[in-house]
Length: 574
View 1 (tube, rainbow, N blue to C red):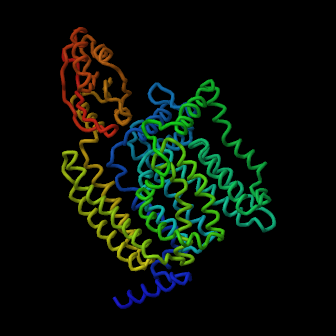
View 2 (tube, rainbow, N blue to C red):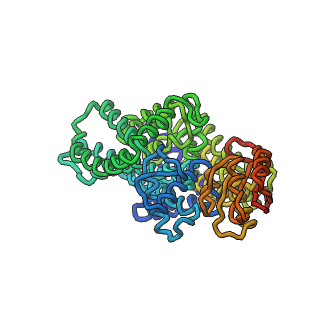
View 3 (cartoon, rainbow, N blue to C red):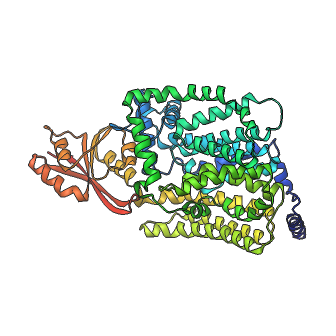
């Protein structure tokens, strides 16, 4: 204990003087260039893999992407994007190609489970963490870069996106690749010659981001470049990007699909993706996701945990180190795009995730590399409060949420979440003692255990919200057909569409009754009808001469809106 107390005193002295604080032997060893990449991969697998197989598809965006990728892999049409019979024109093709490739490589084919589609996000999030470490190496030591990348990988938002079969985890990787190449080219602005490989990485990363999510990556890198030029009053360094040859490479990679989809849809893709999706998000709150400015700032306190607590501690040091190249680049990456996101009407927590590496790198440089720690006690109190409050909230939720849903809490989930809360308290105590670097080990343990508790145990145990898999189980148990034909009325969640092994038809009460009205009765035709439509369905079936046989029902809470729903499962019993 005396040695630990002496180490804390030494750290406090180093932090107060602005000198680089001494790292623990373990952190120095793991943070070396020899071990850091492997340690980061192990860390990512520890937080990204739990729950991948046990958590059902999460409505609505994830199964929309997965279903469209499933249909792409089935059809062999790698230009058009469809969800059932409808064109899905709101996002470019990049993520569908990657998920289709994962499906083909897995060997499952059309029956690939959701974890196969999520594997793309796991790879994307892991690459983003490794690339953050690579960016950090350009401006600070390997140990400081390791801390930056590790804390970013432990954040709730990155881990969440690694668990969802969507675009955002891989988009994050593409943005960090672009920004890393840009940072190295900008840092070499006063040297002779140019690095063609870095320039190529910059333009290839932009192309990948454009094929994943349209103009988002272009906006972030463009605003970063403009801000750097204005900050330093320099533009000659832009030649290092090889703009002419680089832009040609960008067009070669991007244009073939964009031209093909324009021809296939007669321009409809651009009308939908730009006019009805992008501009709708900018001008109004799309799908009830509108929120006022500063919403992202408040949300970031939670979704960027535990990094957000250390960012609080880094604020004074950022001001003191504001002329350092690392801080300048990070601010030019972070501030202008954050302002844009704050003024876009539609707000979702993952929108600001491509800016998270800038926060992580700035924090690592200020606190670990430079030892520029705050002097005011209030910041230590605020950081400690965050480090306690969020784990306690998650622990409480592991108990309260299942009870609210009228389900049983998961004993392993509650126990592991309790351990995470205790580790969070330990972290807060060390921060309050101004032993910031000594707090890194318990905060990593807190984040790992809390994420493990939620994804591996708590989330799968919330049975009432998983309507779709339970509904599929009823159909499989009540029919003897391997691939029954299904029509659904009133419950049209994409997760249900994805989980059914055969193609589902979205209908109404009349079409469902007509669907079942075959002579003789077809035992492989199933109708699932939500209670609100049950009376109309039964009347329509009676008029069509169909004798209904209800083989089961599922009740629970639809997480999209929070409404209680009861869905009956019917056959033609004639």
